[in-house]
Length: 256
Image (cartoon, rainbow, N blue to C red):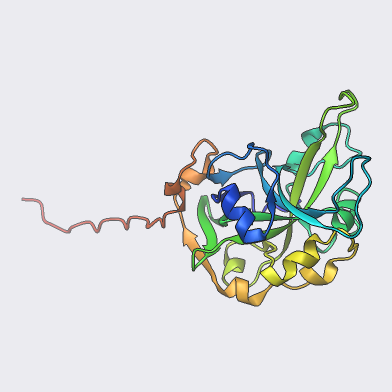
């Protein structure tokens, strides 16, 4: 797991997401309001594309439906003994996701887009950690490349729904982002969404092989308040540019 993209913001409502991603709302009213400080284990909207199933549970190979689903951040492999492992799998390195036992099946068969307004990174300078908010300069949203998995407790009832979890794919940072952290989440441009979500594609490596330079060039790296460090803080003030106060110059004077 990479210690990167450990928090992000997602503020768009289901109707806005449905229009932006050309998807149907499958959140069943479970989506809350804007979240300016999404932390691991929280449930957030994700975009998936699957073959619809008939009454007998058979998929229709000639049809694909794109929908918005609620997923828990922190991927729990199907074979995990308990869901606590998900807190250590919030991110997956794109360089190894196709081979790692925890991620390879999801990378090949279950991919998603995570809508985000932006994400937070922390720059370490000695004992001080300055948080930055990374977001498009034009105020548009982002679609982060994700993979998802289902997990069912051995003690679960037959009719109990499984837990649906996800991880965000990361890659090497470059440009201004590299000055803050050596890794960054993968952002997918609109023209790559269909290919990434395609349920019949088992090798999407080419879509995430290189970061999109246009998306990267349009990002703002904004210093923000350290209030974002606490998951208890959640409000639009976390996104505002933080300007540290300069230490006042000490006036020189003579004692009488």
